[in-house]
Length: 393
Image 1 (cartoon, one colour):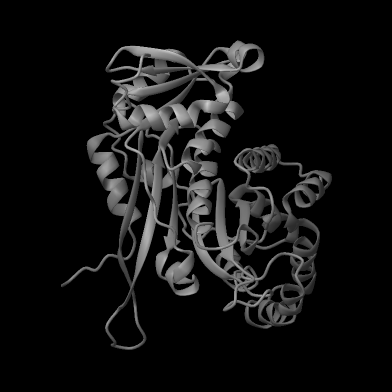
Image 2: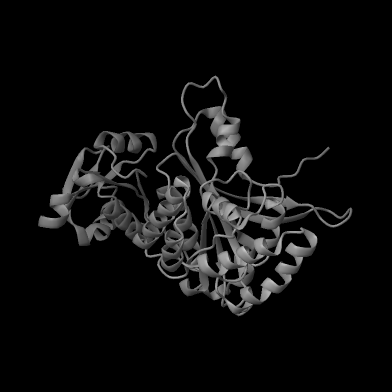
């Protein structure tokens, strides 16, 4: 019997468990297979996965979305890309509010996934409800009151992030976990905004997770308004979410330490290549430098670290930050050692607000220099060309 690769994540999780990995980022591009109709040869296509092991919840989800958005905007205009967010706890609360029994939730979710390809509040999505209602009533035998509530949830609670969150908060969910889920969605949206992912971010409370092992926030990224895609329909380009549960399932009970958290996103590469124009594919020239953006005091300076690391990514520099809201300097040095990062950019509250200076430190050469915040990229570009040796630091 020949076993073909159906998805890339499970083998990676097996590797994480066997090697007891607690902090890791990886990407993989490979061929995956799907069952064909009848006895035909299985279909195959290329998929790209990006995963983050460890780190703080929500920061890692936001980074996964950021990675795909940075890639997608190399090929398409940012306004052509939609980010849809949901939370498994919010979806569960909607099921309870609408009166959908646990026995039929999976079947209802499969039907509702047919309308997710259209943006919330769009004319196309509203028109699809006629078909969805018939299927829910006739095939799944749901009560009409239940179907009415599902349609009401789509109209009231699905939409742009700010509007949808305001209406969801106004609904006054009695469940504390649901309220916490709304706060997590709000925090996720704020992190995306810090990384300039502002427009076309939607909350879609009827969007089911694409994998059973996703829990917490899950997301889908769509391409719309393209020459081959009508404005009312969208092409699903990437899906992802938090899969702590999958890691926990495989974690041995003999291990004394708790399993790490895990977030991943999968990108349909062949759709990107098929829909993009050849002349918009940019060359990528990456500088031979790897930087860790750190903080010293100031409550962690999370937003400042996020903003700077995004600028470095934009300049095609390898850059990371410890995905915690307020890591100690020791934790950041340990992260640099574990990930073989030699160059640190250290932010301080006084440096940013008073002198406008940051400290750049090369651990291997034991050199450091203060640089104006606005000249960091210029300095690193010049320093990397000489491996930091010809500069007086």
